[in-house]
Structure formats: C-alpha cells, structure tokens
Length: 115
Picture 1 (spheres, rainbow, N blue to C red):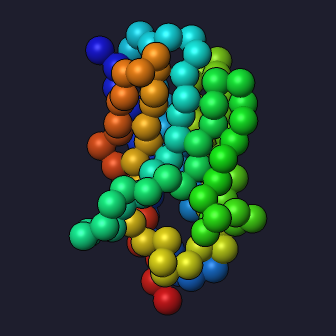
Picture 2 (cartoon, helix red, strand yellow):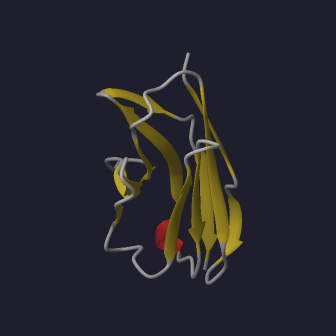
Picture 3 (cartoon, rainbow, N blue to C red):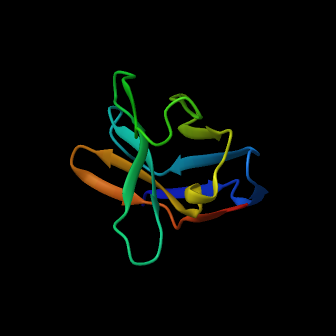
C-alpha cells in the first residue's frame, strides 16, 4: 500500500520562503517519476516541478528561479524549496508519484502567501 505524506505548508508573507516535503512509503518500482502540483479552487491542478527517474528536473515557467526541487532516492523524499513566494503561489500543493504507470497522490498541503 503506497502512501505519500506531505508536510511543510503554511502561511507566509510575500517574499518569504517555505519548504515542502513528501515522503513515500510502501512498495513502488525503483524507477519512478515524482513531482509537486498545485491547485486553487475552480482551476485545474497544474504542475509545479517534477523529476524523472534519471534525475531530469522540469519546472513550471511561473516558478523558475524561485523554487528548487530535490530528491533523495534512498529515503524516497521529494522536497520543494520555495523562495520569493508571491500571493499567486497560494494553493493546495500535492505530491505525485508515477510508478510504472500507477499514479499516487498525497493528501495535499495548503500554502498561503499574504500580500
């Protein structure tokens, strides 16, 4: 039974920083893609950043230069360092794992950036 446990969300002022963490437990294939997505009410869930099995990282244009994704394969942890946060970054952030076509989502963590 695969579970994704997210942490690190909260309330921060514009220009501040937060670090999100996602820990994967359970049996998954050794080669898998991980990523962070976010969603605001009334809008589709969108990609923030993802990392492929071979380490290629992809960022949404809106977060390039501000967010940094890092992955610890041994501990199966995916971190998202978010700097220079803006009010438009306010959303529920979700961790996602794609393991051989099987998709797993975390429960989400709220990030709120005040102006």
